[in-house]
Length: 107
Image 1 (tube, rainbow, N blue to C red):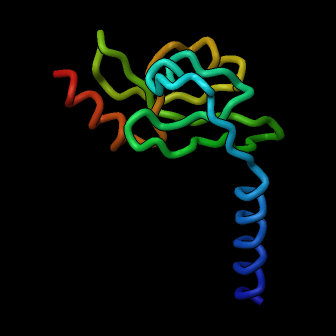
Image 2: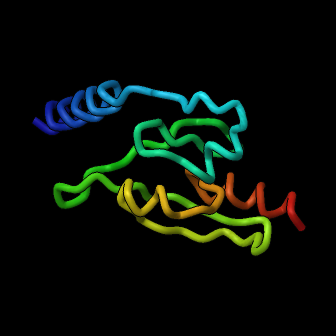
């Protein structure tokens, strides 16, 4: 029974991940597309260029990301709706490791 539960969870996770289409911003400046991200496009990690997808929490899609800036190169973590994230004009990262790599390069 436990194996069936694990298999079901894996299938649901895979189908959710596959249902999210990747749409890259046509702007070739990846740093600009990251900072000035638009919700109609997929968000990409500035360092790794891997997609960052929202997760559903309490029925709402939210992005949990790390972020930083040139002026204050420290890793910060936040959870944002797509609308909030469009107005959050910082470099965006999918994990702390990527964010720390960026911060280290700015010091």
